Length: 81
Image (cartoon, rainbow, N blue to C red; front, side, top):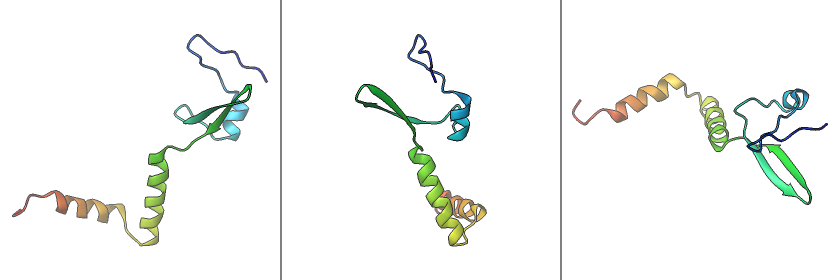
């Protein structure tokens, strides 16, 4: 496969590769120089990784989103209210 670099260094990743790696327009890629080659690898954002771990942990402990939001609201209320 061949891709042409555009004016600002942009390239198009062929659709079959994007689909196989589950890449979308907002996917984050790690770019590395390996010898005379460029290596692009999918990289999950830190937020997505932490969010997934938090969600899994909350689910395992039976904590719902509604309960978290209710507790957050209590914590945000000024004292005496």
